[in-house]
Image 1: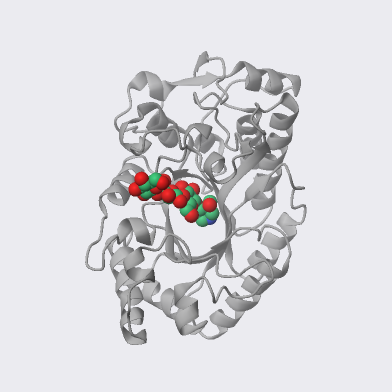
Image 2: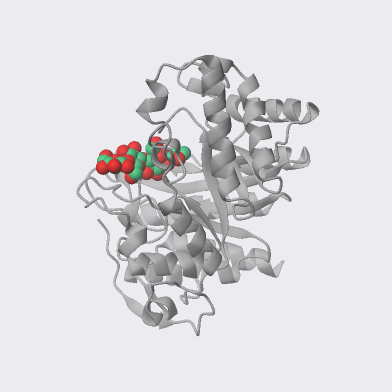
Length: 382
Ligand code: G3I
């Protein structure tokens, strides 16, 4: 666990409404010795400026709002409810939020006839209070589905109605409040084949259910932009090829498909996908919106702490991913999968890796933070 040294820098009165956050937390930004040192070595201005303030006009710099409990040794309660410093960081730096877990089936629809909207409502309310957009995640996925759905005995007709009702109800509730929906998440495997075994919807209905899902979502909120979203699709490969092909085909059939989200879960164990800009551009050139939806960069730790070298390399990955998006005409949204290591999903899922976000556990910024700040500011000046 890494904790930075605090040096308080006041960045002027913030016009942001940070609900539930003391003014001191909202107006004072901590910076770590590590990050500041790395920043100065690279000739950076050490002053931290909120990311949303340096972002180009109209560009969404987003963040996932944690479901909480991602560290096994952590108490379960959702930090969004009680961690004021965390809420302050969400409001100060980001102009878009994505509920990390609270709109997934198992959370929002825990029983056949019961929906649990409270936590997602709270996130949407927070976004409205703080002038933030919202990305909705997700409606048709093979994972995080409740047992009543996956183990229940339903006829095809019943199952189709269950999906239609879910989409209509969930998208309809946030009509006009959620800007982009990840309608279909992770439907292709590494080989660009549809996940017909794991995905209950594809297994039961085949690919035709995808068009239905997009149509139902469009009916429920005609203004929302509807996306496909996947990991391992940052570069040009079988998976991203499959999406481009499918999206063109659906559009020809008049299905309301608007955009493609590449998640951006990167790791220093693998090279940066250097054809990311080229990949995003081909979707943009085809007339689709593009979003980078879930960025984090895992560091191989093997029980230790990240080195200066790791942090520098991590900053480089963040910078390159953001540059790839900013270089593409229809890429207008770049979302981090959580702001701080304190609540990151990574250590639970990848025990040997971690420190994947831009803020340390104590919310002090890492070199990756400054890489994003600089890259956004540069694009704004262009
Ligand atoms: O809600 C239960 C809680 O009741 C229980 O006490 C607790 C104990 O294990 O688990 C809680 O649910 C966990 C949930 O996160 C909320 O914290 C799940 O076990 C856990 O599996 C779930 O992990 C999420 C994961 O998706 C599930 O696949 C991560 O937080 C979330 O960051 C991650 O996000 C995904 C995107 O949706 C899609 N792209 C990949 C990305 C990373 O895997």
